[in-house]
Length: 393
Image (cartoon, rainbow, N blue to C red; front, side, top):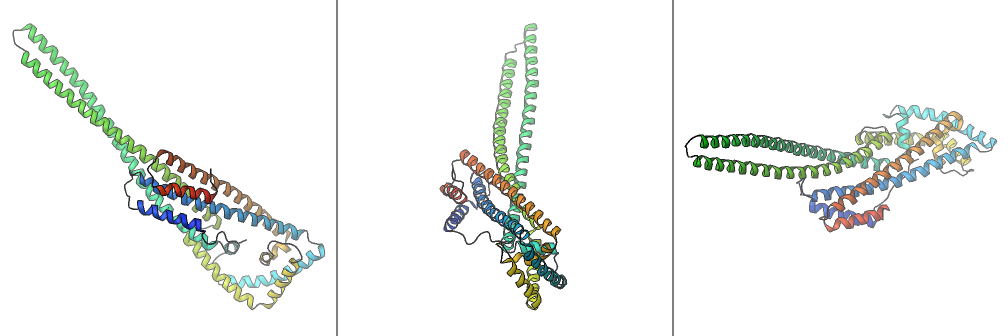
């Protein structure tokens, strides 16, 4: 069921790539998380993600059509005339016996399981591209993780600073209350002394008022500075949270992209997938060498192809490796169930990626509305991406 998703880049894609490179060159040296231009890089990353996910949707649609075609082929074979179907099963039985000998030979040199071999065979044309894309996604995920850690640390820093300012401000307010009470008591005391004695308290009152005024001014100045620092910390915290939300969205999307490939090929990393691919290509070379020396198998394979040529099938060659299903009805039923499940999984994944594309595009719109200081090329890139990915509004 292998198929090729994409060929060479179109002129439109090359033009967008050139625009990306130009803008990246302008902002690549920026290392200040509070610089608005840092968000421009996230917008460009989002555009690249949208292009990649749109290509992924097109590839999944193509695979969906192929899976449907194989289900139709199964129905066509099952509906063959009895005498023709009997001949087909007889030839398939001979091929199955010869394949057992071939499998024994391959297993002696192969380092992957039969299931892995079939999985590689079904996705043969797409695996090299998938390995490259998975490696890029893993690297991108590592980069986003680093950004996530930095922003989370920055967020904690501003939260701690705000809390410290709040505690300091409360302390000054409490001190000002105590001093005010103390000042009032002194004032009352001086008034009592002046009325109950002949002492001249003018100098004392002047000093008291001077100290009180100075103290009040000092506390007012400190509280004003703390209010200003609190506003600055709050502003920086909000800006960091916005950037962190963008990074978290990208982290989730990149994680989903990597997880999907891991689940599809039952691997943990691109390195493991690359190893599986190398083992598969080696096994294929051994298989081809063995088949060239197996005249009987070639003969029966030819007969099988000629029989299947009498009916309209999407892909006849795949039945060379599915002869057991031709003989065994239970095996054929299992294949149908697998194809139906795979088709449903593809449909679900297409819907999921579409939601991610929509989310990414909405996030770009939100950020563009909040900020108006982007380099001119970014607006042009977004328009080009919308046209390329069919997102024109």
